[in-house]
Length: 133
Image 1 (tube, rainbow, N blue to C red):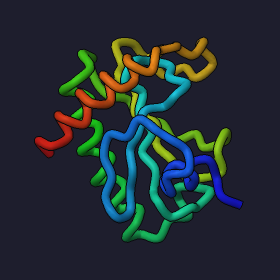
Image 2: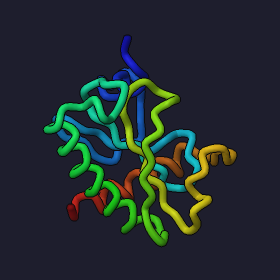
Image 3: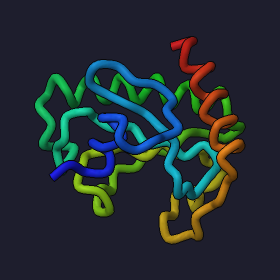
């Protein structure tokens, strides 16, 4: 069964895409805990990140670094936090979250709400900065 991320990758479900290549995609989380909260996903549907083969795992990490650099250039923060939780969607993914405090990466916090225009603006800015990497 295709995960929601596989449906986004296939173009069956819209997303606020930041970047993609043949094997990876990055898009904004539509239920963010911080402005700019981004998901980085391998296009190969694998439930757990550690089950990716070494080549795809390494490529995903390289791609994630570029997305994190673009995110850091776009959203003022002290650093970009990275989390792998993977309980809510059975498709490996990495959360990138702009941080000012350690508690900013607390997934039990209420989710933020943005308008479609705000999501588009945020993704466009990160996408533009991604071109530098």
